[in-house]
Amino acid sequence: MDEARDEWLTLSEAARLLGVHPSTVRAWSDKGLLPVYRTQGGHRRYRRSEVELWAKSHRQKSSVSPQDVMRMAIRYVRVHVAEGRLEQQDWYRKLNNEEARAYYRYAGRLLLTGLLAYLTENGEETLAQAHVLGYDYAIHARRFGLSFVEATQAFLFFRNTVLEAMVHLYAQANVLSGEAWEEMLRRFHEFTDQILIKLLETFQALGT
Image (cartoon, rainbow, N blue to C red; front, side, top):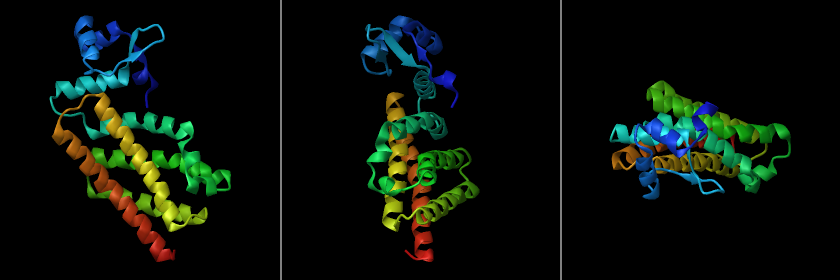
């Protein structure tokens, strides 16, 4: 993700980006309509990525595209994985070498990349990428000594982290359209369900 898009903006800078008066931005913030943060000194600060997402959702009067959210979700997933949530997972603590742990630290990015391709192109070829990911997850899990239950737990950890990121960003952008939420969730589960099915099929074919 372009780091410039996640820079902090002052109230005036956010107003210029949105094309409105600073008092309007202040009012939106006070009403909880626009995501805002406070410095220790009490000054308002805004993330450029969130302001752009919020602006696009309101300009179109419907929803940001799922692919826009996915691009911004990459950083969110990185942060939450880096915060130590992986180390709290029993299946992750079972991994006894750096190669295995490095693979699973990258697993969330693999899921994001495949999902982004599907949301952008939405074709049979990109849906087939879900099968590739499911196979890859299964092969690596077996190689690193995880059972099919533990491999499933690992996948669900990353799927839920990605979903949490998408929901967080939709909420922060104040996306109100029920249709937008429904479409995002439908396509998310359509893709990730295929990954899980292929993961289980591969374990079954190889013998659990």
